Length: 419
Image (tube, rainbow, N blue to C red; front, top):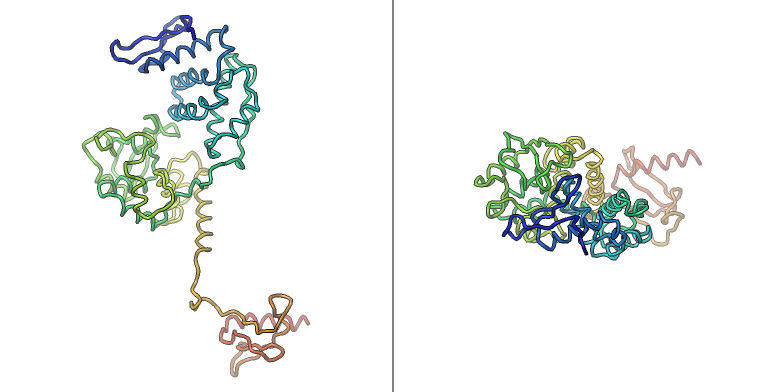
């Protein structure tokens, strides 16, 4: 593809083996990309030329357009550009949709592409949103007449993820088992992540200068940029978090450095994480981010002592609104239901009241016995019915349950008056 002098590739600095792409725009020379390999620089320059040259823009594919599109997003400081590049490379550039010319893409093509994505509901939405923004930019550049992805929707019924997003929440017993399985040198790191509920990137970018007396300030997140809220937030520390910080390494600028002292790589859990989980006897998949989910649930449930309100947990975890925090409350309600279903009293427990024994051959409209078939008597010197007989005189098996007979006696009296 000919760039026609619209963009130039040059080594910068010479002898480094890294290249930059320079373009002439607005009467001045600007750097389109810097510090990239030669093939990457050529690809960026070609994509820029295609977008700017009306003679060849009709042949531009979505994959080619995405090169310049992602470069412009990065120059504008869009948050999460690394994730955008990963999604584009895996789900757009390698797909049939990416090889189609922009001018030939229709709404049905986008829908077929979304349906073929082997992703969960949220990931499908993110991939579709990225393509929608790209096509909208192509529309603004007058490369296409309309945005075919604008009205495409991803429905929850199409969610291909069989796992609950909050399935990794650790119960108090699992938390104890996990900490016991973690090596002593890494236990403070896991404890800190668990009781603060900080996002992984926030924890990896934490510096010693961000730590105060009983609190810390979250100033950086993904890529060293401000947190999701756009501004720093203060996190007051629980006792275990304060103790964990006292045991943190001090020979690095980072509070939780990598093994060699540098900053930990974003998106990766500490080395050995999944082995620690297996050693703790936890069979399901647990992500590092699930420590954040566990923190929110534990605070709302009062597992660590005092029950926190939704507003308090929202502020502690840095959620954008209480709506985000409420999903943990819903998960907690489901957990409570499952706990009730899983609690079985032994048959010999005194809390298990005896059931009515149905003599053989006795049948009724509802489970074999009609209330009108019962005749109640009182034990000598007692005001509470203590024995019951069928009209034939057969004794039922509830002769020593006074509380149950109070209800039965009252029901019989109501039926007698109504009859």
